Amino acid sequence: MLGFSRTPAIAAPENSSAIENGLAHLRSNPLQHRALIMQCPNNPEMLVYRLFKNILCILHIDLGVKNSPSDCNIIIPMDGSSEIPPSSAIQFVLLDRDGVINRKAPEGVYVHQWHDFEPMAGVETAIAALNHAKKRVLVITNQRGVALGLYTQAEVETLHHQLQRHLADHGAHIDAFYVCPHDNNQCNCRKPKTGLLEQAFQDNPDASKTNTLLIGDSLSDIQAANTFGIPSILISNQSSHKSEEAVTLATAVSPSLSDAVKTFLS
Ligand SMILES: [Mg+2]
Ligand SMILES: [Zn+2]
Image (cartoon, rainbow, N blue to C red):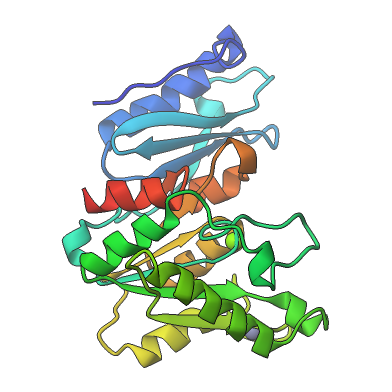
């Protein structure tokens, strides 16, 4: 079943052939693509189509030109193995920290003390549910503030001990933390690089690309998951609007860790 909605702008007559062309392609291959990007060769604007659980959403329409079906090419049919696997198949859940577990500080500000650490609503229950479902919960976090001299790696560890104590009060725990303390372009572990994921896999020989899921709130999290070849859920809500690129690349999108885990475990 495919459904979609149109905004008045995209329903303009000059856009209809481009839209219909994309829809026709998706209808004929409804399960083959998680996203299609149609580009009109005469201009840089694009249509991004995305299937969410068989509901077709048009994420981005920015056309203002004449189109005919022959003007438009489908240029990026992404691979089809793109639903979140059933929870029974997932044994490892990699969580980004800032913006997923705790409220992210404004750009340029780094959370490094417990008293600035504001857990997001429902995260304790969500992590406890993953623990009870026997999923290994691993945190993978970029902490560039260490490289900038704003706090030390020891302080990050102290903060993570405090987080564990807080979670323990709610019957929850994190199985391991993986931290990149480096600055941009200094290492192989700062996401979107995949070094933290590789470390997690080295420590967990049972982890595989088919039994691991990543949940993050940044494009760099989703890019790391895609490069590494594992499914991802992007945390995106009205207070943290995410780039179309992140939404398009993610396997699924959820407004919070709490919602993501409820859906995933249901
Ligand atoms: Mg984050
Ligand atoms: Zn690093």
